[in-house]
Length: 165
Image 1 (cartoon, rainbow, N blue to C red):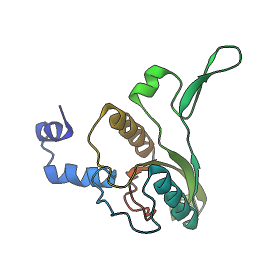
Image 2: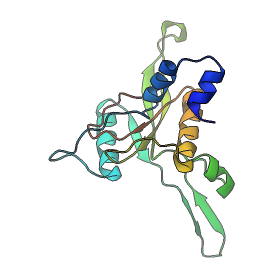
Image 3: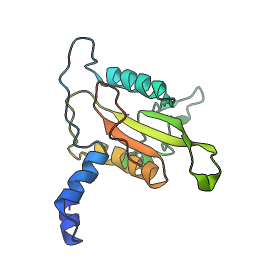
């Protein structure tokens, strides 16, 4: 079953699913590479980090993996990578961070930090629903479901549009 057949079963219009996919950055238009723009995932990541920093947000690289320590024990690192089984189903994003948000009058004007999680892709990438992409989307859904911001991006301009909450 895919998202569209599920939506049909529950009477959700295809337009709503299209909008949802766009909000999660799954249907982003691809900007053609131009001089000075990155052409790799790492380049997109650098541009995104810079754009978010200019907006007052802090982002850090979230490396994922596993290795053996000097005693032969497997050490796993990265968010949501407690075990191979978990990492197969949920893969945390490339960049994680926090953005300051001034809350409403009901919260007496306090500033709170909201969690950000961004999965960077190289220019030209399109979501195809591979197991890897589905595990990345699951993480983004968890973040957004808990009130954070999360999305995929293949943008070279570092824009923050496409964030969802």
